[in-house]
Image (cartoon, rainbow, N blue to C red; front, side, top):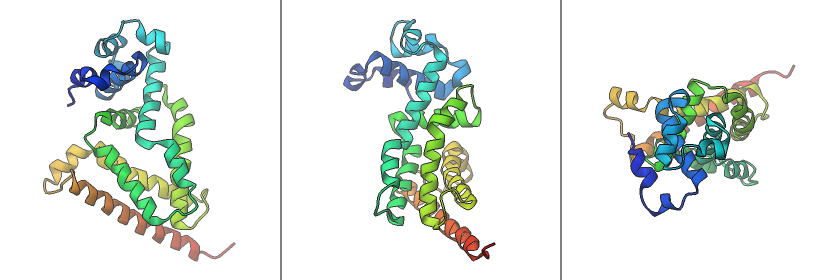
Length: 227
């Protein structure tokens, strides 16, 4: 487990954070570890080393802070603006899409200070809180449409085609499964390297597996007679 106190207090970068950002960082670590219900505003403020009233002052309460943490987690992992620009590139290619997905898996499994972001999102999706409806409407659905556009490109089918929708779900599900069950995967398969070059090889495997599956499914639909 991360040394949360050391991360929040550790060095010049942390000292330069605004009070608001310090609270989001502290809340992210606590929500990732304990969940929304168990993490308290007092614990968050203690970890961020701010006044105990700071959560209410800056966010209007723990509920709104949690929603902001979800938004920050989504921004950190998905980089929506970059993804949107990438999906709209005129010279999009399978090679570029592969590079994107390799980077995406790395962001989920990499040992970086912002790893709480993925854990918060996965916790929310596996056990939704009241914040999920708004989060899904404003963050997840627009992102899902962009993933669908990439699947659509690979499959050569309209973006709203049912096979494309399922294909996009299949892509994301593989990444999410490996992340959410990393310790189990490593225990069952001790010979599998999930660090460094091993992670790159796994990401490449998932992409090749996905690419072949998407094209096979698309081929089946393209062979169907027009009704």
